[in-house]
Length: 83
Image 1 (cartoon, rainbow, N blue to C red):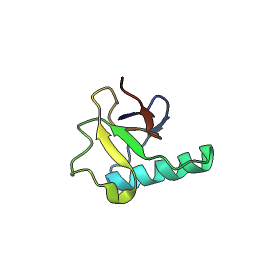
Image 2: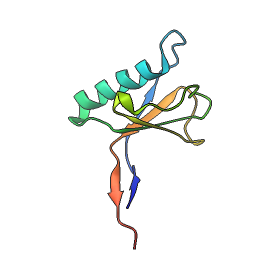
Image 3: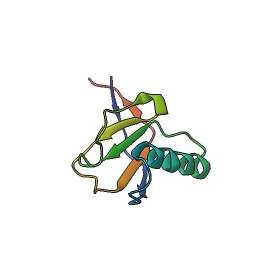
Image 4: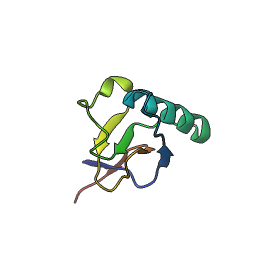
């Protein structure tokens, strides 16, 4: 079984004074208030992630070349069945 995210919320934050994971948590908090769900995955541009991913924040951070720098694509993983 693979996980995938088809839809999500795009969040922009280019404040250089804010920690990378604080940015994700702010975006996740907004997502939860807006959609009533806690996001569990966040895609970022490879240049943004300078530290090893941490699941301790409750969000699986993954890199994706298609995401622009300073953008965070958050959502909920969806299980897809493989034949």
